[in-house]
Amino acid sequence: MTEINRRRFVRGALSTALAGPLLTHPAFVKLGRAADFSGQTLRFMIINPHAGSVDPLSAAFAELTGATVESVSVPYDQITAQSTLDVMSGTNGMDVFEYWYVDKEALVRDGILADVTDRIAADPEIDPDDFLGSLYDTYTLVNGRRYGLPYDGDTHVLFYNRAILERNGQQPPTTWDDYTAVAKAITEAEGANGVHGALLMGKQFPIIIGSSYANRLGGFGGDFLDADGNPSLATDAGVAAAQAMLDAAPYAVPTPLETEFGNSIPVFLSGGAAMIEFWTDLGTWSQDPGQSQIVDQWGVVPMPVGGGNTVNRPALNAGFGFGVSSGSSNPDMAWEFVRMAASKEFHTRVLTDNTTGVDPTRRSALPAYREFAPLQADAVEQAIGNAFSWPTKPESPELMQVLADELGAMLAGDKTAEEAMQDAEASWKEILA
Image 1 (cartoon, rainbow, N blue to C red):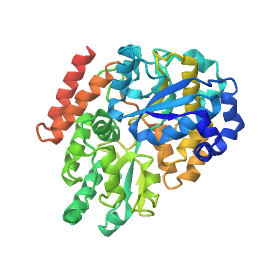
Image 2 (tube, rainbow, N blue to C red; image 1 turned 30 degrees about the vertical axis):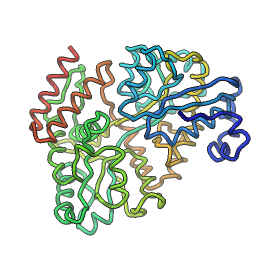
Image 3 (spheres, one colour; image 1 turned 180 degrees about the vertical axis):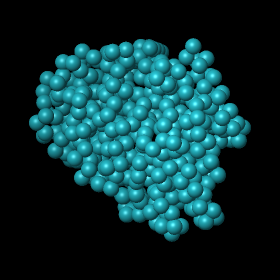
Image 4 (cartoon, rainbow, N blue to C red; image 1 turned 135 degrees about the vertical axis):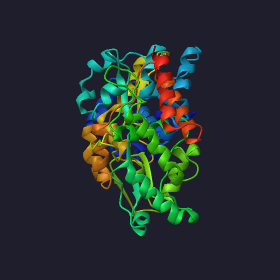
C-alpha cells in the first residue's frame, strides 16, 4: 500500500513536480476550499495500468485537503472482484474504487458503489456536458441514478510501424481484409527474423480478447445486443468479426492467446510488429525515446471496416471511472477525491503525462492533449467521440467472460467462428433469461 500525506508533500519538491501549476490554478484550488480532512486517511483502489496516476492523485488530494492518502493497485482483471470482496466481506478498507464501466451495474446491484446523483447535481463545477461522446452516461448511469465519474476514456485506434510497412510495400489498412493481407505479407517476409505483421491480443480476459473482438464487431457494423437488448453475436456481423480474428491469428506475434496489455507494448515499441490495435496512450509511449525504438517511425489510423459497412465504429474498450465505496466511513471525503480526479484541471494534468495511463474524457482537455500528442490527437478524438459501448447489464461480467472463453476456444482451434458465436449467443440468452 502506498501512503502519501500532506506533510510529506507540502514541504518537498516532489509536491511541485507531481502537481505543478495545477495546485495554484484558481478553479482547482476552489475544489479544496471547503474540504479540510487533516488527520484523516483516504484509501483508494486503482488498476495496475494506472499505477502512474497514484502519485499525482495522492499528492493533489493531500495538498488540497490535508488528508493522508493510501492506495492499493490491483490487476485490471481483478478490480471488480477485489472491490466486491472489500465491501461484502465487511472489511470496508477502501473509500474509493476505480471501476470498469462494463461492470458498473453489477457493482450497483451488489451494493458496492454509493449513489452520488445528488452530489453531482449540487456541483456545477462537474459540468457533465464537457465529457466526450457517450462517456458520462455510459460510465455513470444506472436506472436513472449516477454512481461515479469518468476518469479514463478508453478506446482503440490502429497503430502501425511506418518503416516496416514501407519496406514491405504496404499501406495502413482501411478494411479488415486489408489488415489480414498486410499482416500476412509482412510475417511471410520477416517472420523468420522476429518481425510479425500484427499483434493480436487474445488473452482470455474479457477486457483483452473482448476488445479485439469489439474492434471487428464495430468494423462490420455489428453490436453486442440488438435494439431490443437481445444477444446478436451469431449475426453475420458477429460471426465475421470472430472470423477476422481467426484469419489474422497465423500472422500475429506468437501466440495471441498469451498476448495482453503488458507483454504487447515492448514488442511494438521495439519494432517487432507492424500493427497493433491498442489504447490511445500507446502513441505517447511510441514517441518517448526513453522507452521506444520507433520514435518518428509510427503512425495511427482509425479502426478498419468490414463487409458492407463503410462507417468506422470504434468501441469503448476498457474505460474506467472512480466511485465512492458504499462501505466508506467518510463518504464526504471519498466524494471530494472522486470529483477532484474527474475535474477539468486534474484531467488535463494526468492526460498530458505519459506515465499515468489516462486517455481523454473531457472536451476542455483536448487543446492541451493536441499540443501534447499532436501525431495521434485527430484519430483519438474521432474514436472516443463516436465509440459504442459494451453491454453494461448486471450480468455483463458473466456475459463477457463467456464470450472470452468462446473466442479463446476458437483461437485454440477447438471451434469455428460460427460455432463459437452460436454457442456464445446461446449462453448469453440463458444468462439473460
